[in-house]
Image (cartoon, rainbow, N blue to C red):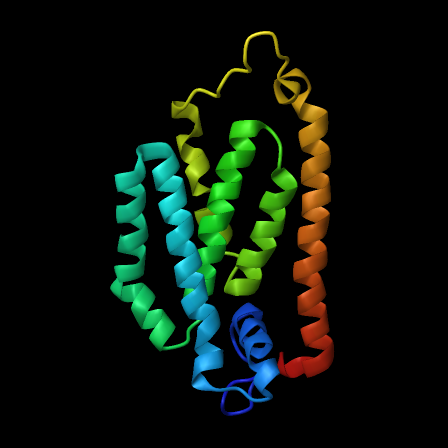
Length: 192
């Protein structure tokens, strides 16, 4: 992607790719089709916030968190200015929820790595620490125990399963991120 002056854009490509997909049926880019991914990302973030807060803290908390997300001045600003920040917000928040779920269940780390790749393509790899930041609370929370009579497979052999999930996830992360970077470098040359 390029900026209005024809120089290679400084942000990764997820927002422009989504805008291009929204613009393809009409055959041209409009302000609406370019801004639609940002608006949908804010809506999806609000729905995720409402669902997570509702599950953990009750329906009222879910409703308030979803409404607060939609009413956030920054969210409205980023939709209006068609910036990649709302897509980045969704990627980081979804990644944080996936990270907490993987820690809680002892499995699902491959999805965390894929989310990290999406965060990187949305804006920057510096979003990955934000995504993983919820794990700082992990030592203060007891992991749920398996129901009586059941064997917790993740607790029985967590090392081997988690190692393979992390290996597969890291491989996918590298393939996605380095693949995009190499393709952009190949197409744009030294200007990239």
